Image (cartoon, rainbow, N blue to C red; front, side):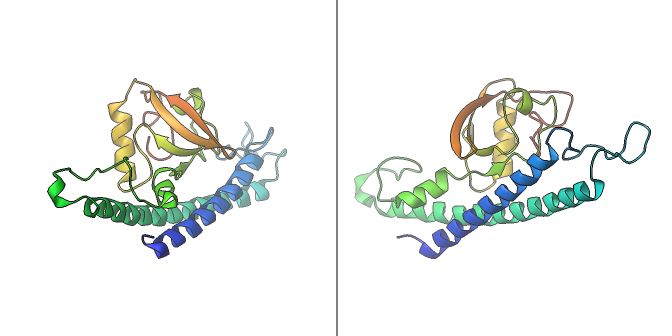
Length: 212
C-alpha cells in the first residue's frame, strides 16, 4: 500500500469537499429559484430602490456564505491536488522499479497492467477537479449544456493533477472551435457531454469561472 497516510488524508479532504459542494448547491438553488435574486443579480429595482420582493439581508448573507464556501472549496481542492501529485509520482516510481533494467522496456507512464492499488488509481484519475458554481449567460458552457452544480472529472485529456489551470487553458486554446469531450458528475451520476470552446461576447472561451 503506497503512501497510506496521503491516501487517507485525500479521502478525508474529498469528503470535506463533497460536504462543501452540497452546502454550496443548496445556497445556489435558493438564490436561483424563480423570483430569487440570483447569485449576482441586482438587489435594487429599475428605479434604484431596494427590491421589495426579496429578503435583501438574507440574500446578502447567503452570497457572503457562498463566497466563504468557495474559498474553502478552493483551499481543499488545492490540498487534494498536491496529494494527488504525490500519489501519482509514487505510482510512476513504482512502475519504473517494477520493470527489470535488462528488459529493454521503458516504464509506461499511464495505463497498462500494474500492481497499483485500485483505490489509488481511482483517486488519481476519477476525482472531480472543479464544480460549476457560476455560468455566464449566453456563454458556450451554458449553450452546450453545462449546469450549475456539475462537477468536472475530465475536460478533453485533462484530469485532476498538477498544473491544472495551465493544462485546462492549453486544452481550451488548442481545441478552439472544435468539440471537446467532457466527463462530468451531475447529481451524483456520471455523464458525457461535448463542449466547443469558442469566442463569444464575454471573457474566455467558455464562460466558466476558472478563466476558461
